[in-house]
Length: 346
Ligand SMILES: Nc1nc2c(ncn2[C@@H]2O[C@H](COP(=O)(O)OP(=O)(O)O)[C@@H](O)[C@H]2O)c(=O)[nH]1
Ligand SMILES: [Mg+2]
Image (cartoon, rainbow, N blue to C red; front, top):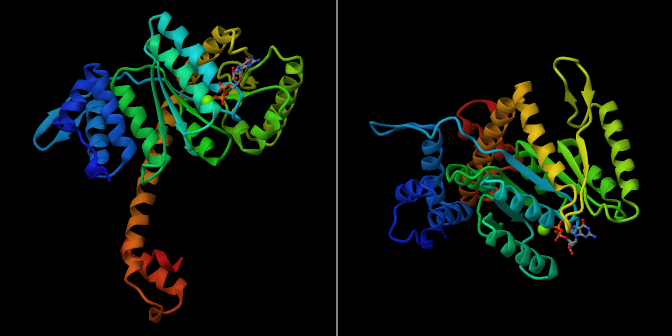
């Protein structure tokens, strides 16, 4: 599949250099390569990493771009909560203040039909016109799935100098939790009247949320959802779940921030931006930013290992027949062969 994907006449190494120089077409091309997966995606991943962090290729030492890293913000919540509207208002405002935000809109279900997507397109067109870099990805193409594609695409956007990089997902499933966990700051958007807070709780999103937007606060029952949310957050502290913050000086613990917004008018959006910045500042001050990024790095390596092992196991098993014996025993033997030890005995 990836073999059919044209890189134009430009080798990946040139695209990486052009992306670093801020060329949007090169950035878009690299994003496509990562999205499609395969050997070219691997090459992009390696060269992008090198360009960001430095390293040695052959006998050539390559300097990285330095300490700069984008603030990666994951945005999730039920479909229709107003995520896209909110992200458009927020990032448009950032451009006006001289920032260079990028949005990666992830749609794991990906049938490109229906009004929601159409509405998204319109809003995206508006945000794009105002200078926000927006990229939507459906996951049909990628062999390794979101877990491999999203971090790779975020890294391309970082290299291009975008900051923040906002990753918006569609719903409240496991995919959303995974994608959200790949961010420095996770924003969960809920709305009145849909049992959103309860739904988000069930999906495990309360545990990964660093801050909340109660959007559609122009609705009369907005106070209810805020109260539900705060109640659930208190419970999550009792059970030891959730991302409560600990002030290192006073030792006081505090709930994730809850901001009321009306995405369609922009009300509360400035406050949301402040809360997002405050969360990043908190992570830096508490020393948890580096740890979180290390966790992310490990999760990404794990995703790659999973993907490689899956390929190995498919290859190994395809040549077998039932004569080989009991499935569990055969599997143990194969696994032991793969890891070259006695892992299979455990
Ligand atoms: N009344 C009201 N409607 C909103 C608000 N934010 C978004 N909407 C509307 O809700 C619908 C869904 O918004 P969208 O951004 O597509 O939600 P998403 O699926 O979470 O991305 C759209 O018709 C928006 O115009 C809000 O704050 N108040
Ligand atoms: Mg949307």
